[in-house]
Length: 101
Image (cartoon, rainbow, N blue to C red; front, side, top):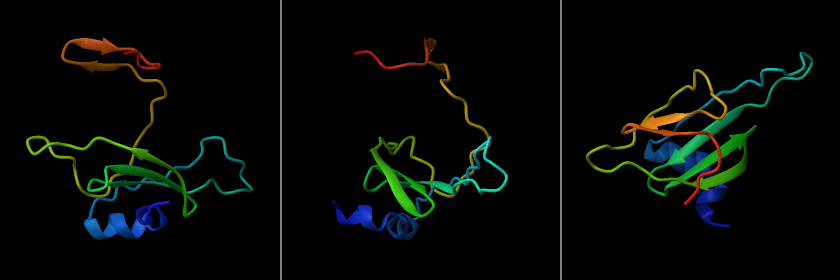
């Protein structure tokens, strides 16, 4: 395991590229609190980590911006999540589902 995986939150905070998400499960039982989830992005390492209740659950390799269109830096809140969205770009429509090559 790489050292950066062990201390994701500290690394991301220091380099100033934290994307934090506080998510509540929509149908969580009232007697139990929903897990606290955060998404932490390290532009330098090109990694995204899903942290749930303080533990890294999954780590993904991600693409980052280029000088003409840099990735944003800061803390953000997700307002809504769309499951299986349809994506539109350059006049093309990409339907939800697995990408084909």
